[in-house]
Amino acid sequence: MRTLRVEVINGMERLIQGYKRFVTEVFPTRRTQFHLLAESQAPEWLFITCSDSRIVPDLILNSGPGDLFITRNAGNVVPVASHDVDGVTATIEYAVEVLRVKHAILCGHSDCGALKAALDVRNLENLPKAKRWLSHVEAAFHHRQPLNPADGDSAELASLIRGNVVAQWLNLRAQPAVAQAMEEARLSVHAWYYDILTGRIEQYDEKAEQFLPLI
Ligand SMILES: [Zn+2]
Image 1: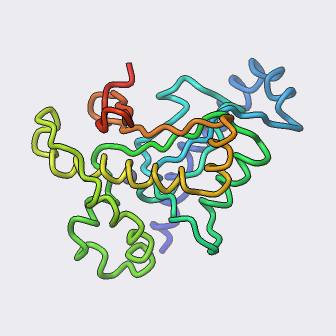
Image 2 (image 1 turned 30 degrees about the horizontal axis):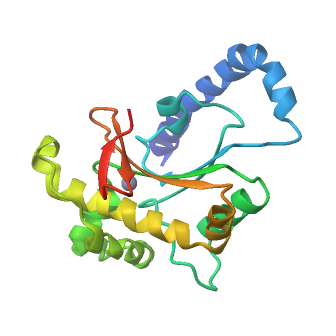
């Protein structure tokens, strides 16, 4: 047990060292920015993405404190609008109604474990809560996108992941607060697919009904 405890402390050391650097080097250079942000926020973007550790929005988008209002979960899910309350939809409502974000971005990613699990539910046999949660991604199968040869061996999975982005984007648009804000032309809603291997983002083009490079 003693060995295990030492390993746990050492594992934390990397983060504590990182925090020390933040306090001594980073914070002092951005003191004014944090001072301005200390009592209010006015983010322009709501960003909904997967919990996956490889997705680092501020790194990908060159954004920083105060920019993105973020909610994350396994599979970048937006539950279907209903009377049920959950953390995702409550966060969306707050972002749209109170913070008045101008854009909502739903961002999925390559190699997403949530969609891998959806393809093989045996992976979820010992995970009853994850299994229930991931029933939200079943709609991905109805929105599968064409296979893209550039995705190589992962083409089938990538087509399902893009399908999930479309499915969750539709759920997002159907959220009452979002639908109302879109009606009032004060919110636009975007669907993105981020490729971890290449760093590229594709955006779903509603008119073309396909994913196209963001830039
Ligand atoms: Zn994921």
